[in-house]
Structure formats: C-alpha cells, structure tokens
Length: 154
Image 1 (cartoon, rainbow, N blue to C red):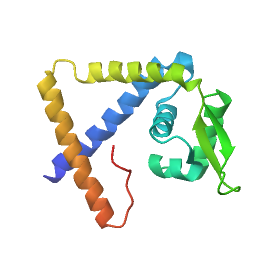
Image 2: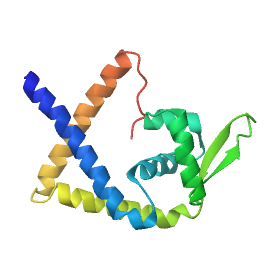
Image 3: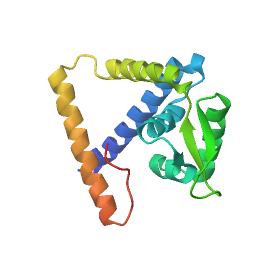
C-alpha cells in the first residue's frame, strides 16, 4: 500500500501541475494565470476579502497574496479599498472588468477538463468526482482534528 500511496501523491501533483500549465497557455494572451484565476474565483465566491483572508483561502502567505493582488490590480481586475470597520485593513474587490475574463476562465477550465476526461462517460466522470470529494472531506476532517483550519465548504 505504501508504494501505491506514493504514486497516488505524485499522480495528484502531476495532474494539478499539468492542469495549471494548460490553463496558463490557454489564457496567456489575456495575461491570466491559473493562480490569478484561483484568486479571482475566491473573490467571486466572497468579494471583499482582506489580503489575510484571501491568503488563508489560497493556503499561501500574505506576502505572496500581496504581489498577486498587485498584478491583478494593475490589470484592472481588482481594487483595494480601506475596510470601513478597520482603517488599517484593506479589502479586495472585483471590478466590472473581471466580467469579461470570467467567461474565458470557465472556457479554459472546460477545455482542460475535456482533455483530462476524454474517453470517459459522464457517469464515470461523476463517479470519479464523487470519489475525489469523499477524499477531500476525509482529509479536511482529519486536518481539522489536527487543529488545522481548512477551506470553507464549496
């Protein structure tokens, strides 16, 4: 079982890496990377996050998020605003300009998924997704048992 577990970890890593590379290439002309899309998606789900909250959701450091938000702001996709309740904090808000790139993000994800699941039936894809969701819940629950905060549910 140990060898299979190691191969499984590498397989997950490779799949995530390949998906990121494909997505980056598909949206290169728009200047959007998969990491930027990940941040924009978090903001779409909960607009007005602080940089710290976004960093927690992305599971990266606040310095990393600061640079990422700088790049998103330079492209006009987000803007920072002072928090009304805490003048020291800044919240990140999507701009109207992000609407145009959002559909391209979805199209890119669809194209990557089409390649990844080519040759599988819809039932097989649904079953695979259910298995991955099950693994995600179990890992998330275990992390919480260990005192590690995980992402909010989808």
